[in-house]
Length: 529
Ligand code: AMP
Ligand code: MG
Image (cartoon, rainbow, N blue to C red; front, side):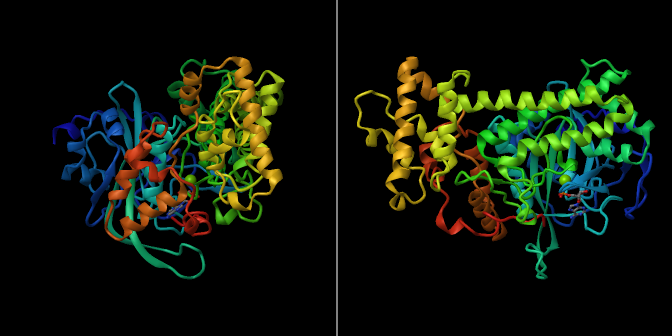
């Protein structure tokens, strides 16, 4: 087929860095190599479930071409194209705060770097394509449930303007995969699936940590220089200052990414250092979740229920902790602590600046420089926590609050009440805090002379109307497992325009339904995927 044959590969990663020809998939420690060459495992009856037409376009592939049998053959891992150089990368990582040693791509197989229509490199990677030398005791496969979650969420995040890896397509393999979802001794077969992920690079903090931990400074330096040359070409290579600058820029991108997560209510769920992208992209969609009611202590990850290390509100400080691990890994190339510490401090100030601007934008302000605006921001976050209040609906409804001076206070506050889960059981004090906030916020905008239309446009571009609520993904999964994949595609369409009014899809603009409050897959997710 012409379009597939026209894909041009330029495999910088495997061409520039040391690797091994794996030969087999026996689990082992891989030393002195950034990757192991390995082929995807064949699957029996691959079938395309969904694809992103935008990612297809980026690669020069039409939707028609993506639906062709040859495409399905290649992107299920059954056949490699000329120019592909398939491999799994070697990385380590800190998991839940502890050094875990070698991890690596246990079930992700990169196919190669394709040149996109803009002339940029995009690594194609199949997640769930079979075992690699890094699979340890696991099978290298992925199930439909977690693959739908990854496919939909990475595209939803992109359309929300959150930096993320992308997803080209989602396929079922026709093979069954056994998983114990709750880790309670009840393994059951599930449909196997593969997602083709796309990003300029999938290099993680852990790719650096593994070589530093082994004292392999030669490979560490090669990797760092490669990342500088390919991804940060404006930084001069070859001096200790190069690696400090690298840490600084990674920190800035990470700060921007985490601030975006907080803006839209995203909780990553497993912010281990092996799940932190060197490009500041959201990577590895596992037991992630979205805040329905605003609760900074919430985490979707059942493995983390006790300590809640990766809870929503802890993400900025965990990102910093992870950057410190990256700094430690880069230290042998710098041999000076202070500049690395400065780069970490730069992360903190960058995050604070970006987050404060973002919070300002959510309230319709330019910044929070004025103390009045700062205290309104604090008031908003406090009001959100007075009673169970939906984060997405609260922020989206705020723009609808009537700002005319003469309007009745209770009436003014009405839109915000749409965000409250149980308005009937609110105390009068709780009601008063909503009323006061709506009143103070309106008064401030009158004082600033804000234009009603401009305010609505800017706030609606910051406060999304539609996000991939946990229950929505779960509905799509349940239908797909019963053989109907239509909701996957409907949600993909919905989430393509998260800031637009979509009246025909207004049923997705509601509070989380009651049945989803404590349901597995909605409020509780395990790492089993
Ligand atoms: P995660 O928690 O998904 O980021 O995965 C942590 C590590 O476990 C990574 O090295 C993964 O490649 C590996 N891993 C997770 N699931 C599987 C699986 N089913 N088969 C092989 N390796 C896996
Ligand atoms: Mg991972």
